[in-house]
Length: 187
Image (tube, rainbow, N blue to C red; front, side, top):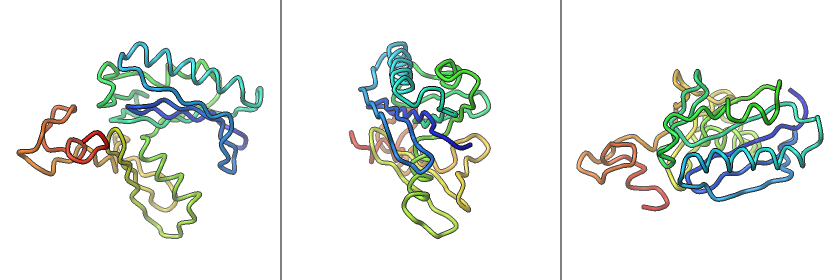
């Protein structure tokens, strides 16, 4: 694929979208707070994506890339972010495809997107990298031989819900003592 893409980032605190050029340059970036209500978040995501797509090079956007807090179901194109409880599961690809009809749409974990971007633009020469995100939640992504390694479910490298303290605090995922319950930004 050559040409600019519409990139969308879904997190527990913010929704962001931008046009990304093939060299990685970001244009027309817009960010809004993530509404706590799932329906309002879905509407805000749609408005945000349409606003950025309209600013982009008319008709030149060749695809859509979505990075989201997880967990994900790549086969179904759904996300179930722990910090957006109404989105379990949310058909994010189906919701955003109408913004760029007929063009490819790809879903990955936000930590995976971060790791691949850092690997690509950071000049890494190693064959493998684990990138970690500590924000509203804790995520991660594996890059092996220059490509995201999603694993069978699309969640490989997502370390936030690994239990590290069996007697630890409750986590929004329903577990106890998860890395995210102990080490996320709000914690």
